[in-house]
Image (tube, rainbow, N blue to C red):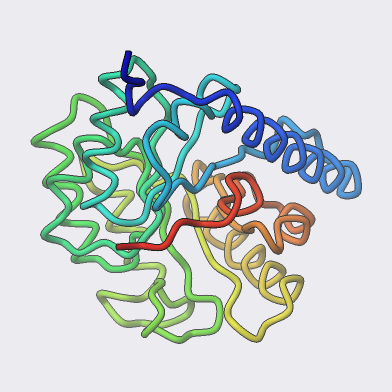
Length: 248
């Protein structure tokens, strides 16, 4: 009998279980060092370029949140996973073009990468038309102010890319819910410096939007620093799933 492409191989399940144990141990140790409960940090498994069967295996192992960064990969993967009977919480974490909004809102539970008023408007319109509940949104922050790498800009008065206008646009959209912030430590920055600055930005945002409590920060190489500075979600790929396959 031919094995289904969505059958989890025992050896792969063992690999993923070991990776998951290591990552959960790191999160627990980081929380202990920061005086936090491990339950206060959500692991988002970044499954971009990995097959749907890995998402199914992770779901069987208790992972509830998965992240993708390309709609053309994520949409069919989410459909395949749903058809197989699993229902993880999908996070879209990559830069998003406005013309992909109608596709993304159909499977994503969270979009972590909103960085402009125009994108917020497109997502809000799409979400209102396609969903029966608001889409959770994180505003992506540019920690170093380099707009070319994505992220809304704290302290900038720009009506489209400034952090305050973007947050206000998300909060005011019928189809969206402002859940918090996301950021990536800039290249060349020490993680502690980056995440300390992010924590300051997040505290200011909560002054205007008290419900925006999510802080998505930290990846395989710097999750400990992110947890120390208040991250509620860490996005882990290679440390959990192994070396990433080459994109075709």
